[in-house]
Structure formats: structure tokens, C-alpha cells
Amino acid sequence: MIVGHEWVVDASGCDAGALRDLPRIQRVIGRIVGELGLKPVGEPAWNKFPGEGGVTGIVLLSESHLACHTYPELGAATFNLYCCRERPEWPWAERLRESLGASDVTVRRLERAVSGVAAEIDG
Image 1 (spheres, rainbow, N blue to C red):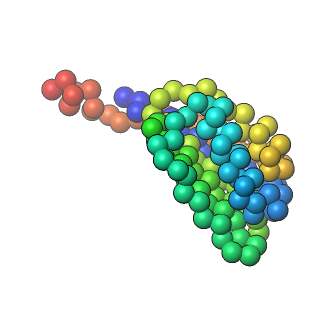
Image 2: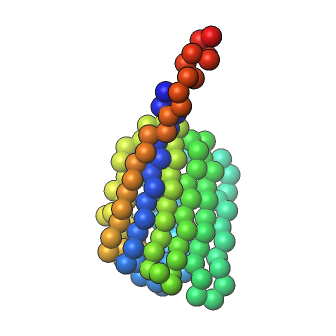
């Protein structure tokens, strides 16, 4: 039984300054939430690492969660979106090129499934 869909996204070749810019990363996350019609259940949690460090953030969603980690020293950002309900594909590559200057974006979409659930529920 499929219990959710997960997007694991790796962006590289990003602008280091963009990856250190907390308000910019917050706007990217806000855009994902808004354009996919996701429903946060509270305020996002953010950590901006000191100096030249990056940003880590997570949004708890009624559908599950959205997390982001940036690595300015590597020009990289990673995103993880897990939803227990079907969602349309979000244009990750286009949006991350536009907002973070990413030159390469890899998107892996996984179906999360469990076996034996229907039998246990029916049983």
C-alpha cells in the first residue's frame, strides 16, 4: 500500500551567497509550500550557521514535512519533501536555477509503501 511520495532533491553549482542568505532560502521554501498548496502546522524552524555557514530549515506539514540544508562551501543545497497525499510535480530544476543559481539539479521521486497493511486493517 502506498503511504506517501517523497522528493529527494540535490542542487549543485549554486551561488554561495544565495545559500547563506536566510531570507532567500525562506522565500524558496515559502514558494514550494504556496505553489503546491501545502499546509504548515506551525512556524518553520530555521538555523543559520555563523559566518560563511549555510542554512538548515524544516517545515512540519499536515501532509508530512519539507526540509532544506545548504552548503555554501560546496555550492550545494538539498531538499526533502514528503507528502502522504499525491501532489503534482514541482518544477524543482527551473525554480532552483532561478532562485539559487543551480547549474545541476537531481530530483528523485520515491513512492513510500508498506506491505501487509491491508491485511492487518481488514483482519
